[in-house]
Structures are given as C-alpha cells and as structure tokens.
Image 1 (cartoon, rainbow over the protein chains, first blue to last red):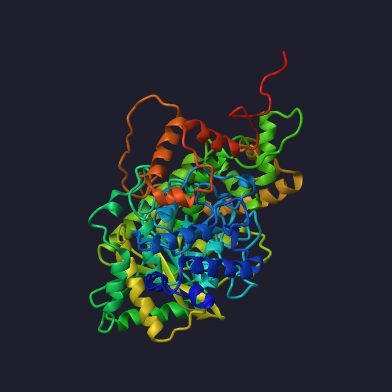
Image 2: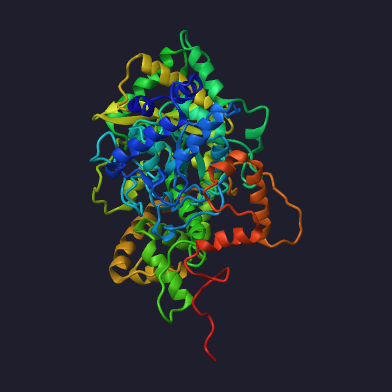
Length: 506
Length: 128
C-alpha cells in the first residue's frame, strides 16, 4: 500500500481519501517512511517535519484533516495531499536555511504567501528540500548541507539549484514540491530527474517570503511527476499578492481559468490531430552546437510527434540568444550581491563571535566563514559589475540584451504559439566532477535563462532517455500563456505515454 | 584584471574575509567568468532601452501613516492567522504570537545574539 501511495497521482490521493480508502494520515506516513528509507542516501531534504524535531509535524496536520473529514467539515480539494518546499521558502516555525550555513538555525516568524496558501489548502508540509546555496548552482553540489544524489543513478547529480525537490519527487519522497527558478533551477533538475518542472510567468506566483537571489528573475513554481499534478499545484499557488509589488493581477482575475481543468480538457481531446493549427518554432540556437546527440535525437523525435499530431513546425532564429547566458551572468550576480548583503550576522542565522572584535570584522568573518565558494564568487562578481566605471559596460549592456531579447521573442510570438528546445544541453553530470572553469557548469543553463530574462512561462517535461538518463523537452510560451503551455505539455506527455516512450521516472 | 589585490579589494567592499589560497583561486575563476560575459559589449549601440523588470508593473500603495514596523506587522499577521482556523490548528503546537510584543520576541529569538528584545552587535564606539 505504501508504495502505491508514494507513486500515486494527485487525483488518486484526492479520490482515495474521499472514498475512505486511505486516510490523510496513512498518505503522509507513507511519504515520511519513504523519506526515512531514502533520504540518508539521497539527501533531498534538509529538514523533515516528522515530529522528531521542534518543528510542526506533518502527521499532526494529516490527523487533523482526517478528524475534520470524519466530522463532515468541508475541506479544500487538495486536503491531505502532502508537499515538500524548497528551503528558499519561508515557513513559520520551520527552519529555513536557503541551503546556506549562514542561515542555519533561522526559524522564520512568518509564512511566505505561497506557503500560507499551501497551509490554507490543508496540505501537510513534509519538510524542506535541499538546494544549492541560495539557489545558486546547477548541480546541487554547492549546498551548505551536502550534495543531493540523482535517484535514477546515484553517481550523478540531480541538477540544480532545485535538485532536492526534483530528486524527492522523482524518488517518491514527495508527490509535489515548490521550487524557485532564476535561470532554470526548476526546469533543469526536472530534465535531469525525469520530472515535470514549470517556471510560471514572472509575477504569477508571489515571491513574498521567498528568499531572494535575483529579484527580477526569480519565480517560484511547481515540481511534479505529471503535467496534471503540476497543474493542480499551480492552481493553488498562483494569484495576485499585494505584498509582492511584482505580482500580476491577471492571475487572480476571471480571465485566468483553472490550469488543471485546461490540462484535463486538452488531454481528453488527443484522439484526432489535437495540435491542428498550433504553430511551433524550434529555437535554432538551442538545437545545435554544445548539445549532446542523445538529447538532440530525443528532441527531434518529439518535434516529429508534434507534426504527426497536426502542429506546424518551423525553425526560428533568436540572434540575441548568443548573449543570453552572458547577460544572465551579469544581471544575476549584480542582484545577488545586493540581496545577500542582508546577511550581516546581526539579525538572523549564525555569526562568528569573539572578544573585542569590531562590527566590520564580525561581518567579514561571518560572511567569510559561512558563505560557500559559489556564493562568494557571485557576490564578488556582482560587486565588480556594479562598481563605478564598469556599471554601464556590464550591467547596462546586459539590460539592453534583455530589451532586445524580449523584442525578438515578441516578434516570434506574433507568428508562433510556442517556442521549443531541449531543456538542458546534456544529461545529468557525474557527481563530484572536478571543474576548474566555472563557465563549464554555467552553460547548463543556456536553454533555460531565456525564459527568465523575458519573464515568460516555460515548462520542462520528460522526453525519453539518453545513456539511461532522462532528458527534457522545454516549451516556452508568451507572457500570461501559462495555461496554453500546460495544455501542450499535457498533450505531449499523454501521447508519449501512449506510445510507450521510456522515461525512467518512478 | 582580477589579480589577487583586486580580488581582495572586492572582498573588502563586500565584507567577505578570504585567505591567500582562496584569493588565488578566485582571481582565476573571476577572470574566466569576466572574460566570457564581456561579449554583451557588442549590443551597446543596438538600443538605448534598458529592461530592468521583465513585465509591466503596477505600483502598490499603502496608507501613509506612521507605525512601528514589527508591531504593525504582528497585528496584521496575527489577524490573518486568527481568521484561518485550519492554519491556527495546524500550527497550534507553536507559540503563536497573539500580540505585538510576542511577535517581536519571535523575530528576535532567531538572531545570533540578543538582549532585552534588541539585537546585540559588537561595540561600535570607543571607551572614551
């Protein structure tokens, strides 16, 4: 039964509880058992809310839901479906570290808006997922709490920064997770672990209470095992929030319909040419040099599938794509260096303390000791980029790339409904590989940063195996077309399933 | 450009203490990243428009009245929590702040060092 629960879909968990087949307690317990069994090896959770620590236990929450159900109280649809949250998301009373030693021991006094929505929807919080320190990395090896292993092959990384969430969902340690995506941190780990990762339109999900890495790029979003599961979670967390001034009112308006319903309708109509009239552009710059053959073969196969399903496909050029990664590695560190300035050893977390030290020394030593190497690299790079004399040449030009890239994408979206590419150029890397040049790793984000720079929604869905490891197919939509992106993803997922494409997920 | 001295200067500006070995390694790494990203220079004449935020934003306003940050937040936060019975019951095992001073205590509790509801920092003024 336990295995049946940890591999179930969201709808199954909802229905089984309604029928009285399983209790919320049994569901949560099954996931906690799985965590106990797998987490020592995979390290996907930093904190587990199993009642063994000072934090509120997911089991207590589940028991209360069962009591409420028995007494006939009206419960939200998602009641009793448990979830894990990336440790960037503030949870009242549950330690929130951002994957950094500098914040270890910090217990937020408030919930992020999205965490509050999850609590309000009666979803037990299983724990907090591991990540690269402050969401900076593409392998999870930069976590201050040890690396995460890829559940499909433990000699490989799960991707990053949301490797903990992806590994957890892929291995059945959770059914759903919320991650954050700044340059691909939800989508690239999804590609590496055979899960579904969605980065919404910038402003669809509130960033209030989500630790900031790069504020103009960060966007929280769902991690799940199927497109429909992901849609159910997106319906919960999306929406306007007056506490986040970059939040978009559209996502609470009448025009924004249920994403789960959209996916179900799209998947119900796949029998006859479901993509007739859908225009797709294949991004030329992201389907050639630097991309592994196995990844490209799988990608081309899915593009042919789109044509078989009635879609029209053209190759499109985005000349600005050449500059996207560089612009990203200028804007992001600039924002990182100022966002991480708040960790000064005074208000939260850990600090270095000894007799007769000055405030400046305390701050310097605290940041020197508790920030990891990647955090230091990016802060220093940002400090350089923003310094007088370099500002225009670096940051200014990067912002111009952002303008031009958006113009090119807008032009394409006047002719095409979606732009597609592989999610990442390679399959999962080896864990612990010695990398001397940081740029080698940074290029893992080459296909994903575009969506963040433009603020557009993008999803990664499992796209078959290469070298026995998962690959991802990325669908990029225009701003506010989140539901449309989900619909296409849902159709492709369903057809691949019917055709028996091996995905390697559990 | 990123010689050891320059790296140390950046560390001073960013308040990060590093040792010689780290400075050496960082100077190589930063040099390599810096060389790679300079390619954006090629677009400098192609537009004058700088995009800071990707999508159109609407300003959010609040009443312009004097308040003490933490206390204001606490009352708002507590009210919100009282409103939602489930959230309250879910987290009932927590010392839920019901007034501003308890909420302040909760904030202060997570600081590395505190005294009488205030953050403690090393002495910033001399003895005389």
